[in-house]
Length: 484
Image 1 (spheres, helix red, strand yellow):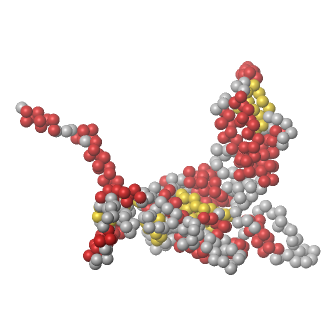
Image 2 (cartoon, helix red, strand yellow):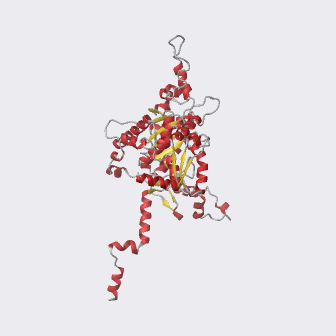
Image 3 (tube, one colour):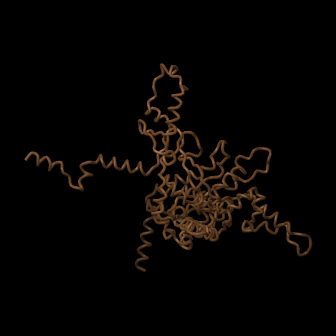
């Protein structure tokens, strides 16, 4: 009887393993995670997929067979004088591990046989160009041409990724160069695209890039940010999008007496990334060093979008257009293009070369789209129409205090006029609203009887004040509206 009872106690139902053995589940999860992520050698920082099976030491540290063999050869050849080590305390692996920075984990690449068995990239998950543009219209006002170009480029990019090399016709990448004045919506357009599409997208700044060996970010740091956006999944990052902002800051400098480490050299370094190449990328850092593991990323299927304000490019375009002017009654005037708001739309590759961009760099950006300067009507629409418009944000803030915030048409026009004077695009709208909303946001919480605040043109121009209605007046208005 005792033996039978003992057998009953030790037997477990199939669904009870997790409850009675939680430690086993944790161990299984850790083993699955180790199989999913690649391990790196502690000394040479190469992944296990390149070095072969790693030798695990104390505290979870691992070393590749090559580094272990080199260490043993050094000891056998007598290059280490053990007599000099007398009196020195031994270093524990745990102490050494705490001294070094924490290494980033990189997902292990799947073998080719497993890749072939998986289904191809599903193009149906990416919306059609008109749907992408329709979603962008809800957040970005105007710039219809730029939105159309980006929508088509993104859709064609993922069609290209889906087809791969299924036949003899190989589709090349169509990288994009966006040119527009400051505050016209270049960066905001790409950030909005990142929210709408379920694809890894990295936004990098070209101003911090320098030639390898100099203080600043290496060119490979652009891909490092994309790898971080893809949760260190190399295969996912190889289908991503990179937006390089302030691309005009790496133009070739006019002064050629000094080495141009952040201009023409960066353009030449970006050539291999734009074209498509196997690049060794530091994981979790902006530059390569002995403490950071490296992984290989293929940029062949990565779409690059470069954007910049290109200041003084208008003067280069005007200079080219004014060369055709001559003397006579039918000659063009020298100031014909001075007040042209769409002067950037007349840009050519020759103008960009004169600005300081090298021909090899421009050749890898076949699609050039320009963004127009914002007008007064566009600024008024930006204030009130987008889903996350600035006015809607302040209305929500005051709604938490049970206060209605309204703007009349004259106030919106006055804000747009002040923004045009600052000549910083849509960024000026936020600064202007922050200025005149400061007193309102400070005074309203003092009085609980305030029910509605209406911003007028006179208040924006400092010739009057806002219209304030009390809660009792609002109740009377609601009752009269209900009776009528």
